[in-house]
Image (tube, rainbow, N blue to C red; front, side, top):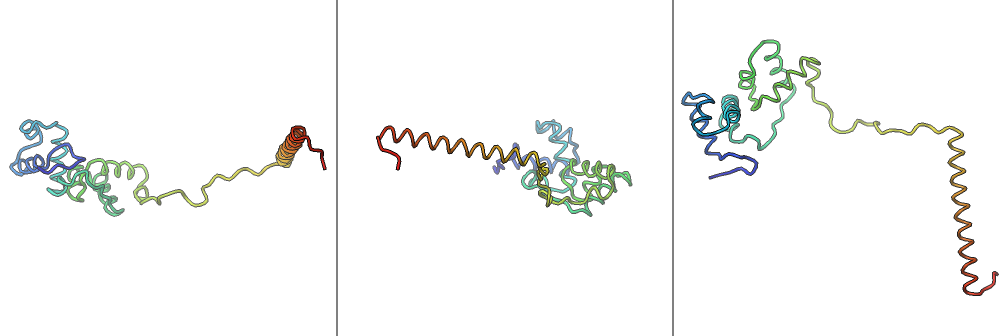
Length: 172
């Protein structure tokens, strides 16, 4: 038995589901006969009808991407033409309801432009630039640096004096 590590069900069960669909059984009958969860049987039947045996067997192995034209045509077919999600999935070879539903929502909200691919990564020049410092802030920063330098030199002088006391050497 061939078992995909990411798959809960054996490939042979999926083949059996496909054969039962070809024999004319619905997802409710298949669910009862094979003791599968009803949602799983429903999803498998839908995927098998939409993309065939290869789509059913390769389900979950690789995320498929669809080009702009396919997304737009699928969304228009469902939203404008009133075709069912199942028909749209079959017509455009989409293996899942989720992307078609997302495309339809985006198409309704933003039209065809909302389905265009977005550039990946951070846009150029999007780094946050610090606000320019005022003259007062520059002077305060300079005072802090000078005070730190002064404290360092005082500490150095104190350490040298302590070393002279311990060794008994006189300053040159």
